[in-house]
Length: 429
Ligand SMILES: NC(=O)c1ccc[n+]([C@@H]2O[C@H](COP(=O)([O-])OP(=O)(O)OC[C@H]3O[C@@H](n4cnc5c(N)ncnc54)[C@H](O)[C@@H]3O)[C@@H](O)[C@H]2O)c1
Image 1 (spheres, rainbow, N blue to C red):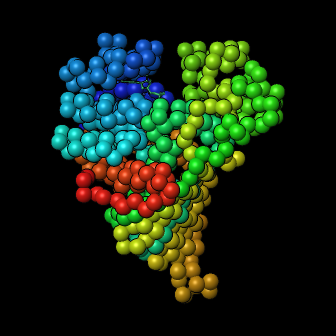
Image 2: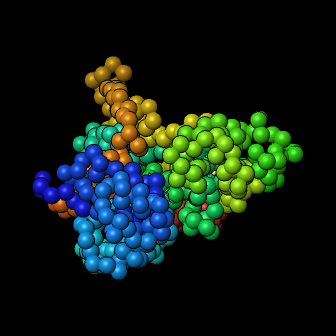
């Protein structure tokens, strides 16, 4: 390894970017944060203090950063979804490599634009598909590559989004209205899962996609009789509704803190009174769950046919009690299945020499850390990629992320057209 740390500037110093940038605090010999660009001045000053660089290196936007000569190897781009392409392209032209949050584009034409800019500039861009770096998914991939289950016939995946996560992000929160955030729920939440499916299938590519789904639950007409407009202000059901902001957020103040209490982030130790005041002052997470401006689906199913005939299904279901991701891959010689959260993985291989006609193995891959350890491992791999240009098995360089994103765009197009079958065209990439 090189003796100098890779230097990086944070662009969009929010919740996600700080998670990645904190790698520098644990591994100063590997990564050094040397600047920040964000219109939120408090976040910039926090970053300068936290990572120890001069306030002269605080810029008020990605655009302002792009107006000064390059002064670092890389950028960690944690802006919101619809800003990824517009903020990244000028920085690529300046010569920065980029660790870029998912989804890296919000539609196919933007995706093409960024892909072209990466090819033209020859820079290294890695997309934050952190699940590829979780040991659970890496073990599945490793066994598929080793040929343990033969050629894949079918993959079944599901992502259950808990009722409180659904409420916080996709009904009351930042990804609830596709006209405002410019992403769909499948893109914002499940581009990870479809990326995993494409990664498991690689180099076999998707050929046809179809999808159905809807916003079934959170509509004004489904509000219970007498429901108010804001839980803690005027709702008689505040102590009984499953989605009451009092029950979800005031009584669990440490959960979803970065979203629900974003307006209190300047306070070191916010009190219950601060949180009640925040609700009184218009905090959107106090809105009646049935009376928000949400328009994204709360459940969606995707059906995929791959080149050569293999098939895949993916079900995203919001509203479950627990968050859960499951996967079941069936191949010509065996199968692998498991649940990400518990880390339980099962491998069964066809074997006529065994009394049951198969060999079974169970592996425990439970692991701490954000996204099963993926949040930290992706930064480590990005540093390696920037230094050497070598791609690991998990590497989510932009060219490796196109199939997953394209599948999401086509699935949403299909859903909007009653499940119509959409063909994948890769020739433009
Ligand atoms: N990989 C994952 O598992 C994962 C998980 C959650 C969110 N995300 C993605 O991470 C991204 C960021 O989400 P977040 O919750 O951290 O957002 P955030 O709102 O906390 O942070 C975004 C930051 O960008 C700043 N910003 C706005 N305009 C800017 C500009 N022109 N130049 C520079 N900065 C600008 C904002 O002020 C804000 O501080 C989103 O795309 C989201 O979908 C990824």
